[in-house]
Image (cartoon, rainbow, N blue to C red; front, side):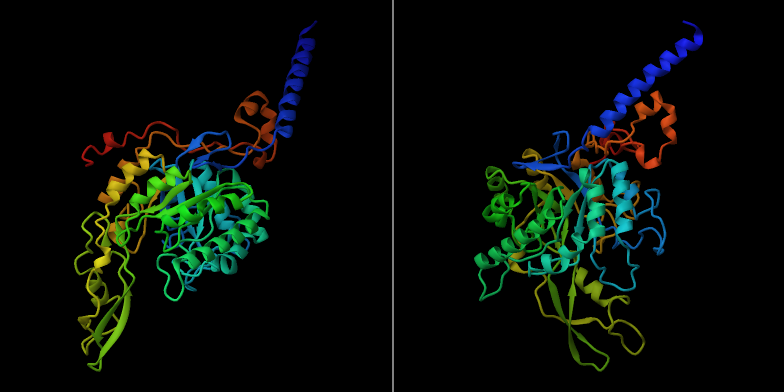
Length: 466
């Protein structure tokens, strides 16, 4: 056979191989989403995933890309707050603060197109995104999950985006919604917990009715703190989910209630507990102050001190943090004739409620979670209202605070969980069949990450870590 004949045979052989590969690509199902079995989370290839991550207040930091344009096309190359800087830590998870409706009208209203691009960027950076709605934070009525939030989750445009990313996505239906221990008479804790359970069963049904398969994360009641609520109703919620794929999230703001002793009970009950928020400071409830107004009369005002309790074992707040925040020029509307802030005359509450002295230490919690392979996420990367609770001073990876340095050391990251894309034309197929490069871009499998999986070696870079 001549030269031309060899070329024809080789091309025919290549075409047959290509046809086989293309047939496999078309016939193989897409990789399944993350799922929960027992108390553990797994990826679509049945690899154990232990969440180790950071909370990013993506909309609240007010640095989320540019103002939206009505017909703009949003791409993963756009900048979204400090997400790229957070990704440099090599954590495997980011919890994204989102809103069904942002509460301040002065903030540009971002839509589902922005979230779509953010999730694409998470995938490229090997970050498992947890999307949570922040609208009803610490609202005592769990019915709001269905009345105000589920309509956003089940909106057709939202569902389309969630399904697009469902292989590596977790959805956190509501941040810190509902009450249990904090219920006020004549209601009882048992009745409040039942209301919580019924509301979330309804929400789970509505989510699954949309064909959404990813894990659903549910925050504990009482601003996320009541881990013992899950030992009572957690399994019933799981059994109600047709996919049995729930994550039960606890927030360790335990200055007034230390739930550490409950952790073993959740492990023994085989419950899929994660700690969605771990922090070094805890905000107060509304503090009441009495100040002199411009007429020289005492007037009562309320204020939330974001750094009220230090969760480092002291059980005490930052010294005079509430007084400073109320008395400075920016926050205090009460001025004298010369425009100077009028000082607080009387504090109507003691600086620390006696019930807050649990002497809880977040530093002691983290080894317990590691021992039981329980995932956790730190609050917050940037820019939190409580400055000592920020992991960075300006959102950049090179500007870690002492708290941020300690947190990243405790994460002990060696490698991140690979996030597998949908079945598409692989780089190997492109090398073997170069003409495939002319196919539409969305048919081509994009690189999994912009970074490799090499060990972080954090101590080598920061040898003075405690």
